[in-house]
Length: 210
Image (cartoon, rainbow, N blue to C red; front, top):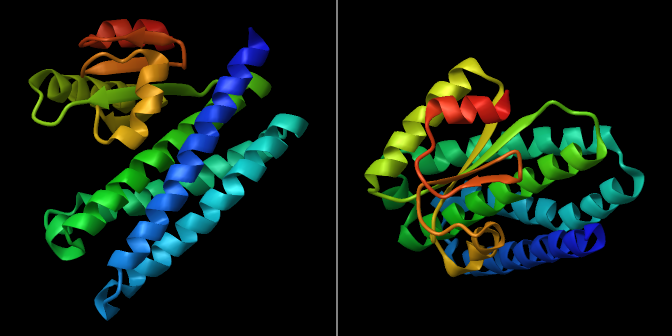
């Protein structure tokens, strides 16, 4: 059972690394103007990180190097923050262009999954008290908005890492949704194995992470 699970994990890693690399190639075709030079350099940096990720993941698995996993999580978290700021601006889609914005958002989702999987490695191989929640939301979905508010309250009082991914955003990212059997938004996966395909109350979440 454990061997089969590891194979599935490696398959997921290989899939999203390949997707990220392909997305980077496409993005390069869109980024041609001088004004977008900073974005181009930023994306090249992310692609280099993507190529190194699989090697690092294998090294972490072989050596169970907890410090390496923690350093990588810190690095990815910083990149997620910077990319999140870029995408979160009100005029982001207008300034970046529709196609560039869509590809950057895909990259943001992929980076979240990368970081999520590293936390999974940390949980399996190291002594850690990290709490992790994978949150699938729907755009313009009232229950998703309510779930987001609940998670905001949880984060204010507890040390929890939340990864928010738009449900069915793109076909390239549905492999993780299928893996967990996510049926519709909102849905949460708490600490990698507690799955709820519905609005989850504050008290239920706290009970599961306590």
